[in-house]
Image (cartoon, rainbow, N blue to C red; front, side, top):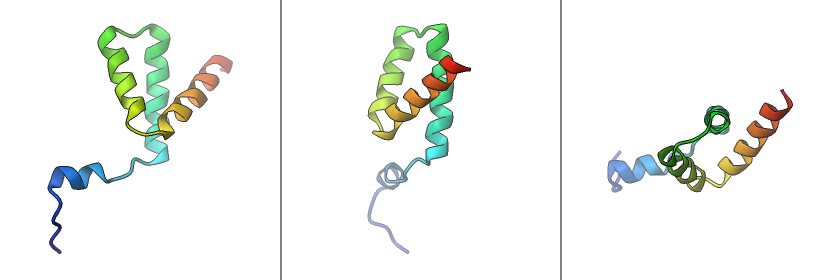
Length: 68
């Protein structure tokens, strides 16, 4: 099967799973808790901007972290 999209464009159309987002959000919560560098903060903001589901996942992970 021939696909007219460049490989990079095809890769960007693959949707991240909810499980992967939740796992990444959990990792971010640990990093945020210890304090982020300016570079890490920028990477977090970029990660959040990449998918609208990520902000909710981060909020859920933060709530779990606080109440654990």
